[in-house]
Image 1 (cartoon, rainbow, N blue to C red):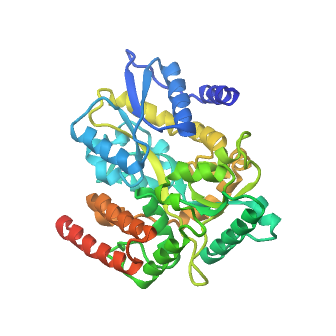
Image 2 (image 1 turned 90 degrees about the vertical axis):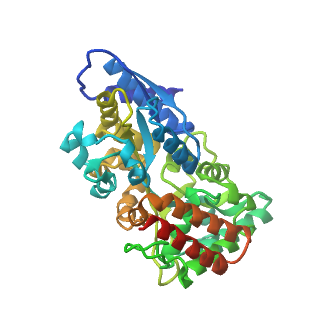
Image 3 (image 1 turned 30 degrees about the horizontal axis):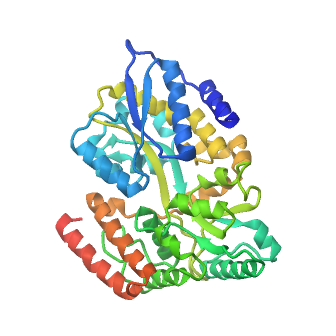
Length: 424
């Protein structure tokens, strides 16, 4: 409660000057589902509402990102005006652009240009800024530094070394009575999170990105097959069988409970893992993801979330002002310090207060510069079909339903049909 009160005070103290409208309105924003992200959204919107005299209601979207995407498409496709501001994934801007207002009408160039250019470019469709950068993401590898020190091991640099290290510590800890210890957890359920993990495995082994920048389908290649086959070998050896149903929070919960040595997750987990009531507080480290062998390279998928104003909002100007506030430098700084949410504003990566609270952010810049982009620009409105076929194929391999070779061959053929119908 004290932390929430402190954060609320910080948000109130960070309020920007806004012009008050003639009359108050009630906005609805879809942001966050549970936990810390939901708390931050509620605190910030409440602070803005108190200052402006408006009201803000929080809608709760589906927990999994692909379920949220389809729910948004249904609502927006019907011209639903109940939600004014949407939290959207970085891969949805082009898919939903026609349903959002051009934020350039309402925000200053200074507000826009302080963000990473690549994210602004991603959010600009046909010259329209359809989403304002809110926080960015890359995949990170969390590890139990206390356990590595206990067994005299160094942080691994490639995937083979990571799995060997994880299996060794898992075995030793089980001998010592920790029967529930596993070496590695990740997002293995059949959803967008698995697409991110699988793209990182494949890219690390120089297997491409499913569809290349020219739009050619490249997934059926030896390096991609090798990467997915190796991942399948982890199941029920170094990764628990239930990882095949894990999303981000499931992986985080197992790691925080002390029952995993390594975890792939997004930066949000840092603050939660280091909270005072966390069983692993002060015991963890975070690294960029490992490379795929001697000739491979570290590969993290670029993620992040944006805020967009619905074209069907009855109050687009007021909604845009809420977006401006939520994405402002001061609020992003508070989210970075209090919740380890990586800012989209470039100069904040040099802020000493942020780096003191979340030291791993110092590693984020190079990781972001080399981040693997999902094939959204190449596939356009067909991206969701592409990624769905991709995660389904990978999930089958992880489950033992066919080999990586056979499933990736089938995947390539299915993607050819999607490309033929869609014309990308």
